[in-house]
Image (cartoon, rainbow, N blue to C red; front, side, top):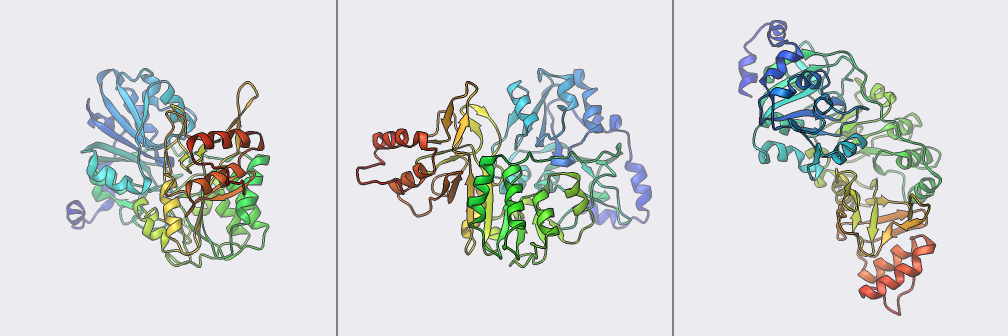
Length: 457
């Protein structure tokens, strides 16, 4: 804020812009061995600065580079120059397919977080970030740079950063909302990058099983609900089914803004009639097709806000009939949910899943759904049940049994809230694949959570 007060005395913003404008090669000279560098979030990850930093590979050591979801088709330039991670180590609070590949190759490590806590995590718990760099839109006449359709924990990163470099990309949409821009007074250096469209993240078409899961969920959704959808074929199919149903008067309060919301709005299903931020579609980042970014650009209906606001349990719960829909990988008979790993193989992060599971339950009439196919097909063609007696060694408990609400497979919906261990077992076995139900009953008997009096509902 002191920088901002000093800058308020300046008259010529354009002159200040020229003073701070440098090449990418010049900007990355501030990075030193041992530094912690942040590359930005989602579609705001730097590109030209990454390329410039890669040129310094041989002169730098032990540089840690943090991101959230590397969603470009090729790995960072620093790792192309340093594939054995002798000079650079990448860290991520959530994994994409590329992050998973880099993790397998031993050059990318996961940071476990609850998404709603990320702002405080960066501001108070990691020490100084030596250099923060991220993409922004072009400067406006007041000296402000819009973050584009990603905000998340940026203000925690900025608070902790010793140096701030912005990479201006003319293709960043200008997104409305809360704390959605940074002033030139807070910035140390500016580079003007090539105009690059944001990465398009297009969900695959829903499978037949995902369509069955979606149908079970849509039967549970009422008019007047407030939606949180994840990305993927199934959530998008939920949106399609809602668009074709009698459900209406919907609102949006979600961590991620995806294509399904655009389609629901175009079908007249979204009115924004909710308790908080009435009339606004609230989110903390967007990922989807170009249609999503075009919809959000300078749209007053969009309301992007920091993650510690959007994912706050109190803010989520202040809205009525919150419906949260996310995917998971495995569920055990206690109702523990793994959404992050297959054994020791890391797949993705907790993200905001637990935030919205808990926030939706605080909501009057709220429901959260964690969805999985009942089985996985193995390489040899055999099937493995994804409802298991206990989570395998190495599995991560993303949602503890005390928080789990509805579990959904293609065979139905099981409500875990307020249910005893044997009732949970009954309900979960009832939505398991039929080929595995007897085996699950036998295992439950060994575990002491299935008795002779138990009966599959």
